[in-house]
Amino acid sequence: MKKLLFCLLLIMSFVLFAGCGSSKPAAEGKTNTAPAEVDESLVVINGLEFHLDKEGSFNGLNYIIPSDFAEAEHPVYVQYSYRQEDGVNLLFYRVFAYPGKDITYAINDLGLDANIPLTDGKTDNIEYKVYEEPRDDGGTIHFYFIDHGDTLYTLNFVSKYDIQDFEQKILNSVKF
Image 1 (cartoon, rainbow, N blue to C red):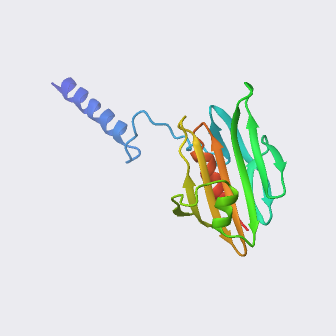
Image 2 (cartoon, helix red, strand yellow):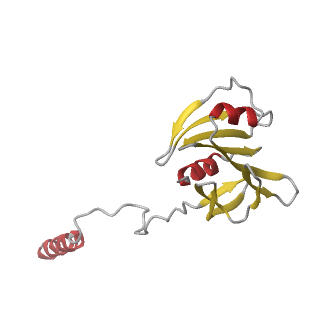
Image 3 (cartoon, one colour):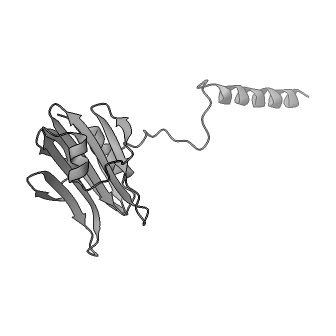
């Protein structure tokens, strides 16, 4: 009987000692690793990764753009584009500047219908009006009109791919 009582006491001692320690329950299946850092400069379009790593500027409008994109400056706009290995354009991004002009002038200059539906929008830095032109392939044609000072700017995005993240990151980077 003494041996049985001794064994029970010994087992209870082990249980008590094993139970001592941290009062916080350990989460099952979790490790103590820090959350992965999110690269805010990264955009993925059609499976291709780009980093918004280059400062761009056109007539007082400043923004970021991937350094991988080709740049072509014209008198009224600057264009950024990327051609995929198969020769197909991934996207065009254009920045137009219309000093001393209004949105009616820009809409006409861009060859758009005078009665296009415009939606208001804003980021932390800018307010804009946007027109989304439908595409047969489900892609993107967006025109963002930004009135700043005496200049109307238009940002134009064209792609047959989903470039919503790219557009939003460009718009969030716009500063004067």
